[in-house]
Amino acid sequence: MKVNGKHTRTIWLKEDDPCVVQVINQQKLPHAFDILDLRTVEDCRAAIQDMTIRGAGLIGAAAGYGMYIAALTSPEKGARAFIEKAAGILVATRPTASNLAWAVNRQLAAIRTCSTREESVKTALETATAIADEDAESCRRIGEHGKEIIIEMARKKQGGTVHILTHCNAGWLAFVDYGSATAPIYAAFDAGIKLHVWVDETRPRNQGAGLTAWELGQHGVPHDLITDNAGGHLMQHGMVDLVITGADRVTRNGDAANKIGTYLKAAAAKDNKVPFYVALPSSTFDFGRVDGVKNIPIEERDSSEVRFVTGKTADGKIETVQICPDSTPARNWGFDVTPARLISRLICERGVCEASEEGVLGLFPEKRP
Image (cartoon, rainbow, N blue to C red; front, side):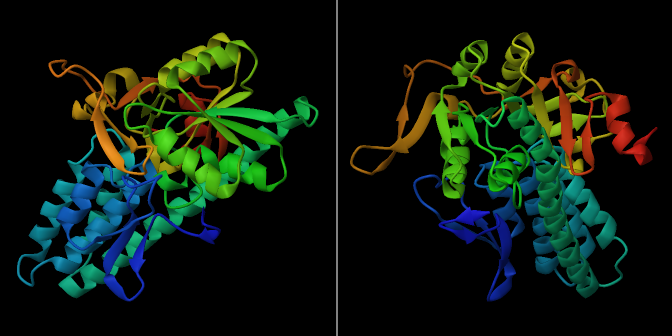
């Protein structure tokens, strides 16, 4: 998508050194645009773990490139064992998003067909590139399918502005390009549809305030930042026409894990008869699981993310401050699960379906048990 008017992806090989993977350092946004070099498996692990890079699709792409780096830096003797160990390190970084393990397992399956280290490096690069390119294309197609939903809402409003609420960042910063929840927004906006986005701040890491607002601004999409707790109020007063969020894992029966607070938005949307959509590429489906509330692992992150907040001061300095008493402990669950019954439809690259086992498997018949 666009950064200062120039098309940019979130992850790529360094132009003059294809042994280096480059990513946008999302910890620096929105106040600075910084590029980070990833040269080792440890660099990739740390970037995923500390959320320098984050978002379901981007985590998967970064894991794919991390496996390429593992093959590239593996020793002549014991290369296979080195790569297998790297795979375990990468998979262990974050448990909730399914794209991570999916990408690593895809790389392992490809590399295991190779007979030499050189062949492994070549295959790993080809696979990493394919994962990234497919992610971008899937998100583009999500945009085309989801655009029709927004266009239909615009027709109902007789050309009036369509107000969309989103939560966290499921934009192009969370993927390789386009985004999932934002892809329909960008596609509709570029098609001339009048729309406006309510951007949840998304505590505790404020990905809505820092990332979604930044990228919408870069693309020129009208938007307003709101507190996390304002969404229900807006829905009660007819100020939200539809909700679109992303997901980090969606089960075969349509339950969706996403950033903490998504469930509350879905419950409020159901109560106020506001359509609630979840947009995701097929790599985010976990076809082996049902009952997401019981069976999706939920990451609990460091309590410091709740106790401290980082921002820009009046004199332009970036500072981190504590917002609670010194002795106050905190808990920090990163995700919650929205049951399928609260989801109007799922939007993926193959089309739009009901959030149910039949709906999902209707688009993916090859995944029927």
